[in-house]
Amino acid sequence: ITHVRVNMVFFPSHTWLLDFGASFHLTSHKEWFTCYEVKSLGKVRYGDSHMCDVIGIGDISIHFGHGSLLIMKNVCHVV
Image 1: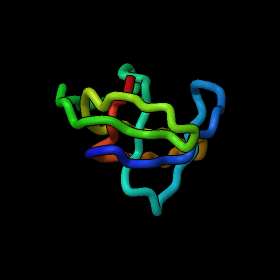
Image 2: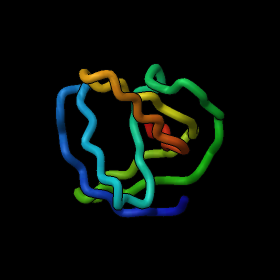
Image 3: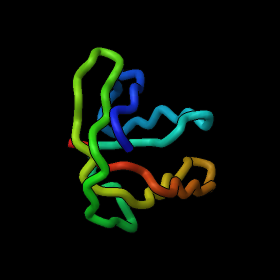
Image 4: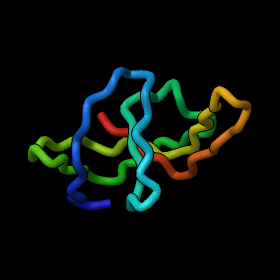
């Protein structure tokens, strides 16, 4: 991943904004990963030109209130 531009939206830390048309998903919450690999993958540039490092990649499980489970694969960990 090198210099990908994404839109930045702020929500409470426990909220996900899912865009199934996105090239990739990212989070700064390492504790959310159920499977994780430390990996330097470059930088991400947000819509406001702020840049973050991608320092890992892995899977995150999202449990919905009605009992469904979504496993997001290859989510980028940014700092």
